[in-house]
Image (tube, rainbow, N blue to C red; front, side, top):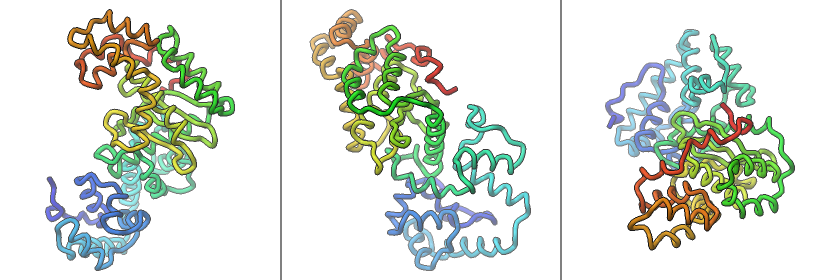
Length: 370
């Protein structure tokens, strides 16, 4: 592990750079750092972006938190402020701006996916980035204000990877803004939710269900996740219109249905002005009340408890015939049954290949964003 005392301050790097490194080592978010220091998110953001000089008191606090001397942080900040007064070459200034953009957005991955046009100059890159965010000027501090809305705080959501997740979310909003559905009808969605399991067994049940979601006033589509985001899906509000996005990270039929059921639960129970979006990592996400409730509702609609009770007498020697009998009885796709058993460690994860084709090949192109 890299210790703070081993770091050498590059001439153009202020204390914020080294504080962010220490946060990543500890897997701290800005919210965590603000709590440790006893300051606001806005205050810590100014420190991390070197927009505010360190006071002697703050230098002493960082010394205690990171087990260094207060002088270490004073020297970093003083050296950086002196360097700023010297001015930068145009090449250095461009490199700084590019570094800021690439730290907060996986630019190469976005270009590869066609989410951003290519560029031949910094000016062109800035223009593309501003258009993507609908900003008038580069201001990534706006993203940091949204970090507490993320449902996970771990390595996958450190300072920069959290920005990648919010970049994915912005792309989802951009896509959703181009789609039209009927006015949202919560009662219709609730009724559709009750019958979700029946669609899992229909020959074209996935597309029929997506069509019914549109009729309920819910936008739904597939948008691949960005590197280092580890997202399975998301639910958010675009104005008054609910939106569900599936990433296809696992590409299994059971994963698709559970993700959709999970996101519908968020729409019906959790989304509001105070919680306008939820980005979910269903496998590795940190547990909280909203996630537990969404998981419980999704499991209920997909007949998980009924499946376990039906198959319990046969678990010592479970056959595909018995799985299919259970699937027929409860009108549920057999892949969902096997997926649940694997999740509960009742059968090996190798069995998830049973009944599980690549779900993306069953989803109509009208719902997929390449």
